[in-house]
Length: 397
Image 1 (cartoon, rainbow, N blue to C red):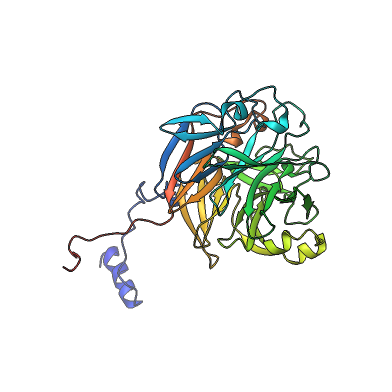
Image 2: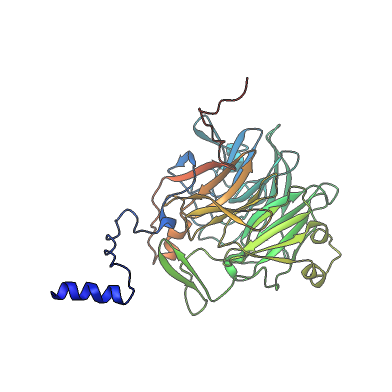
């Protein structure tokens, strides 16, 4: 008997199954990380070739964009209305363009933006011009009535609410507390002295709270992977190599009963009842007792809420925007290499708008080299995928 026959007989005697052929080599089309491919539909609403955008808000079908001056002291409008394919300084050129007017009477550096339940536009003016000290009267809360295009609220932030290293970042306005509403502001302070700031609109009364609470602080040591680079935030051992800071993202529940917030250098989401936070008689210890840790949500800059209470969270590690559903699960809404440093985010009806500023490419994080490549984008995407239709199943009638 030949050796080949002896081998086959031995297999049969041992009860072995016939030998299987080796699997075909993996094809290149299937041998990749599916999580690295673009996902989710979005459209580019606008391209900006000048300064990078940050804040975004819509009301009555009108689109408003903020262009802060804290990173680059540019000569353009810091607040503009986007209409008919052009940017118009808002509420007017004298207020939004650079000038020698006193800082308290003009817009210096518009950062976060939002609207209230009446459809009025609100913005936080961080007051900072790159390379210059923060001037008295520069940092303030601004309210603008889009019907008249007039500023109806101008609340200057002062010490001890405002610190020399404050970086007033974003805000939300709650009209259910206080005679004219309450403003909640995140002072991210680039991670050094962050806090939540509470302002009563009617009186201008203001205070900073929870400055020492862990939910407000930047976590360190902390590592983020930005554009494929592992970067560590651990001052003073490591110089910051990406956008970092304390409490930053902020959003309200649809009924304004709950404020959600998160530090920029963190992956956790927190909440606190607005009725508690708006009460100026409450101590920090009493406020801390009302804070809830809602778990991880990834690294985020901006946060926004839709009418169903779902939270949209930008993610600068994955060039993505995620959605936290009310049951705590997450969906990927958008993921694309062009979604660099997703920043300001705003829900308008069934659409979500987001600015992309490429902030991680600023010279300060890259050895003095500005690596940003205009244009910068304003994008939007639907909150829910369009319905699917099957022509083989026509509607009855």
